[in-house]
Amino acid sequence: MRALQLERLHKQLKWAEEKSFFYQQKFAKAGVTAKDIQSLEDIRRLPFLTSNELYQIDSLDILTMPLSGIMRFSVMQQENGEVTKLYTNGDVAHNVDMMTRSLVAAGINQTSVVALQGDMSDSRSMDIQYALEMLGATVVAMGTDYRQWLRFMELVSMDTIISTPQLIMQLIIQLQATGKNIADYPITRVICRNQQGLQNAMQRHIADRTHATVYNFYEPAELGTASMLFQCEAHKGYHIQEDYFYPEIVAFHSDQVVTEPHQMGELVVTTLMAEAMPLIRYRTGQAVMMETDTCDCGRTLHRVTTPFTFM
Image (cartoon, rainbow, N blue to C red; front, side, top):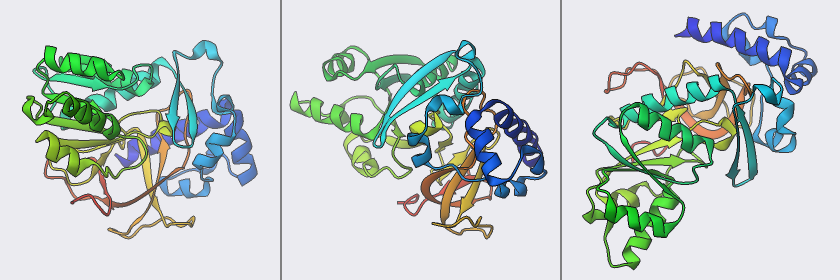
């Protein structure tokens, strides 16, 4: 895996430096070039990218190609404001590949009937739908209108809900307002799309109300994908899509990389296959520990855990 990561990192840095005005300036200011990065450890010579920077700059400055090379344009809402993400055909294919893995890890297969809540103009929602369809699952696109949710809940016998925790709670409340209990429906699996942080404060409540197994995916708008981190059936942290993202753990409020095992720090990620909008050493703001032992599920992708992973 490390050899693959290094190969892809070299290509990603060269591409970003040659094609992106933003990274040309950022690397020059830091006095570093793509050629200086000869090992994975050398990535520490590159400057960090923060969410504040992303919200302050023109998104097109990061773009590595003219709009004629872009397949998809998506504007996503975050607490800090709007995030504009652009994707090539390759970017979408990579995102769907990652999402397919994540859904399989949560037990989705061709017999699944899945309620997909949320704004379907959001690129992440589209990727989820494509991945579900690739797996042969039945997809019920619920949208954001609660009246449509209630109608579909009566029309279709669904076993899975994929949504943000906030929309799932709205569904529970709307059903309750009509005298119905979500636990009376045949839902056995809830996949929460955590957009603000890794920790899902509503997880226990959602599990108690639905009587379903809850899985969590981490999908901040800045990353533009719904499945960089995902939970498997073992529920022992979040697997990292390491062939698409290179993870680092950095000491809080510091530039020092944490190398000791089981030490808490901030998760920093670098895209390895992004075409339209690479992210180099992006500080996610999430407190995690790296777990390198093999997961009980058998997957060899490394995991990160949070202070509340095993609650």
